[in-house]
Length: 598
Image 1 (cartoon, rainbow, N blue to C red):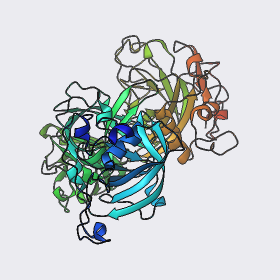
Image 2 (cartoon, rainbow, N blue to C red):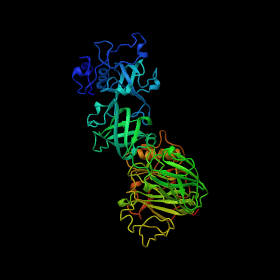
Image 3 (cartoon, one colour):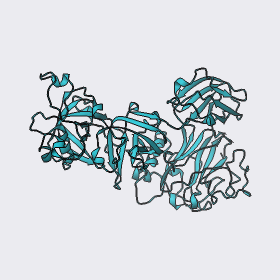
């Protein structure tokens, strides 16, 4: 669409006639009551884009006038006979992503987002309503014009088929270069997603998208979904998708980067096909008689037989029951022998939600018979070592198995975030575990060591120079920890075991979204607080994150022998007072100053 001034919109009855919109439009329809009576607009299909007075502007021209108007709070711009095409819920940031609704009057636009909570209007608008109102306040957010305050809201008809207003933009080549032509308009689009799933503001996730018309893998063309919806629709890199009858969304970042966002809020609006073949990725004992299998894609529950006959084990273990939940299958088994290595094999009649069977090369995996999980704490950190040879030390507080443990940085969702699953091994109280980052770099791992799971001297330091003979040495391929703002978290299966907020203590209080998300998760699990207790109003965001984080990520030594961030003693009250300020000589493989054997 093109933005038209109100004066231009009055020149003729249609956009085409004014010569200001190069896109073809269907003729404007007359605003005639279906029944010829006063209530006909409610009873019949609503009219589209026709003026009540043949001399007046169409609804499309009125929408264009609002879009073209200067932002302000003293406007009085009428909208008469536009169709509500979509009702949007609030997700995340109320400034960028508020509740509201979109209006449109012709399939080729223009359209407008009204950032007024539908629940505050009477009647509450729903898609298919024909409505009229006046815009009294207009704002522009992220480059997108919005009606932020309206008055005189009325509904004149219901039940219009909004799909007739949706454009299929799959072949469009200008989705990034002509955003105003699509902003807020109802669209249907098919494409293929690429790249990792990453955060896209509070409560949102995104992937890059290619379409028939946009083939360059530009990350600024995005499929953006609520974070809770992304796993539900099981969208991942390589999947083909179709998003149906949702508004096109645009956003210009503070750095001036224009992003075009293909959004949806309901699983019924998104279909996926031709996704990567599902794989069995892990098996972890949850108890002596329960095993959790994890797959690379959501599993179709109806493809799993209730008698668990599609799951076979060695060493005499037998399945007795099965339950499916998205990407996990929980199997009830006969009693497992702690420490015994088992292999589970899944029949490829188990399928993903698209009916695709398991990859034949990924139907089996090994696991250890259940042992009670260990209890560990993060004990020492250095994210500043040259070459990304960063180190994290864990201290074992309670003996048990490391099977199912994970360590992450930030939200653990970005491609560069540390997100590591520990191997299955058994540890004793007071044991130490040193996690070595960037294991593939020769300077970080000069002896090409692998993870120790049998003993702390399984790979002695005399041969493997980076190892510590008084700790289990675990090697991770991550390229290095983030040394600006970070959150290190340890999970035992899905339960947070420990976590710490860390910061470089610079003059810029802005904190990465991934760190803020992880901090909120820690706080909700009662694993981080302000000194003295509590959480800042609004959470650990920006300056509040910095104020309550442990310093100083980029002031630690640049070698393993330099200074590090360490716990001060045996206590853990889940705040920054548990830690020093990166000014103490490192103690990898031994207890920190102030700590004693438990």
